Length: 449
Image (cartoon, rainbow, N blue to C red; front, side, top):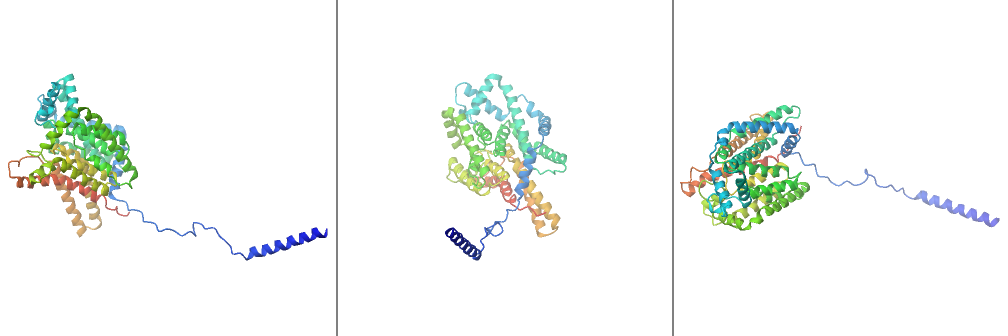
């Protein structure tokens, strides 16, 4: 009994000593969100004008399908009415005759590239020969004219997509977009000349522009459309460089761009490789022509300057420049679209007045950015130096728009090379400067509310 009592007393003494020691220990607190040291955070990137353009395109995409259908029907009816004489003429226009000669040569077992002026890839030649054998020359011409009108209307309606519309008054926004579309349909000289010669540039531009505008959402389908456009008329091969070289920190867009480019390459290979022999004939012809006459292109400018550079070398150098610009500036949807369309103008084998129609979205973006800057500056500081600078900027953009919408190729071919350069360089620089303006002005910070 005594031993048990002693054991209990010993245990009590030890417990008392432990509690006394525990009371002397300093209190330990677990770190909380209030006590943890905070890392310095970067301030959020200010909103930019590019977001206004991207939001405008997103709002256009959200329009009800019946609204898009109604607008397209109105524009098609206007186009058919405005250009009825050109569309209904039973005689073949200049380019339609060239197409028909190439199709007939292929149907007879000869190379279509024996005929001067036929610069189109083999898939287009074979598709045209197939259609010619099935429905005849006259019906084929009307089919091509119909596709061209539909492509023209679609390009113009897509150009109006980048116009900001007031959310509180959607009807006003629709009227604004229709008004701009009607202007782009009836005013530019390139529209009349494109239909007057019967060139398929409008249909090809519609395919390429659809791919460029929707590649973030539908990269594979967009790539197939882009490959199809290049396989029928090589307006937009340099767009692949812009899509591939997007900054990697824009992960979603960069990944979609690479998938789109891969699908485009696969589409071009599937369409062109079965005609490898004819493709070699086309390349041999393209590398030695399209630098003289009434053609406007960077390649002709290089030729007139007397630089010892072949067309393949010039295209490679231009592609590298475009990749550098894409790596630096292709950070938003509208900038990718602008840079891609600028690439079309910079690297197109032949640039005519009707080819410039593909640049219509860039013209819309430049107009919106210049007007927004001028109106905002005029409201905040009328008569100031900033106001005068914004007004000068608006005038310069208007001059660029006039040059892009109303220039006509040719007319100075009989002059000396140095004089031709003086005429040719501004016509090429105007659309490129407008593209550069969109890249620069869209990076402006939006004013704080």
